[in-house]
Amino acid sequence: MSEIMPNQNSKLPGYWFANLHASYQLTKELQIFGLINNAFNQRVALFGTFFDTSDVAKAGLTFTDPRTEVLGPPLTVYAGIRVTF
Image (cartoon, rainbow, N blue to C red):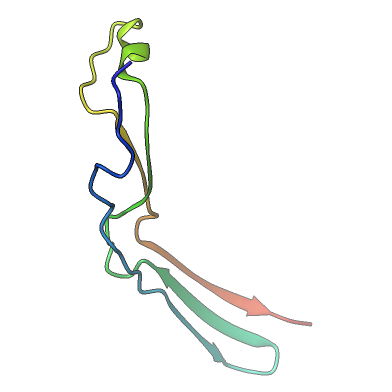
């Protein structure tokens, strides 16, 4: 197992998201709405950790970088109509 020294690796960079929401009440019973998450499609790492590269070598895989990152959500767009009775 390779030795990993705590706090010796660089931190993940900061990030920001722009989420947008709009709705319009057409009548008392009818509303249209829209939602955009991550409007600028920022590709960021939310979380990072390390793993033992020798474990995957037993499976025939070769990794030299023990870092893993969990990516944030991509651009998502929702729209709809809400009807109340």
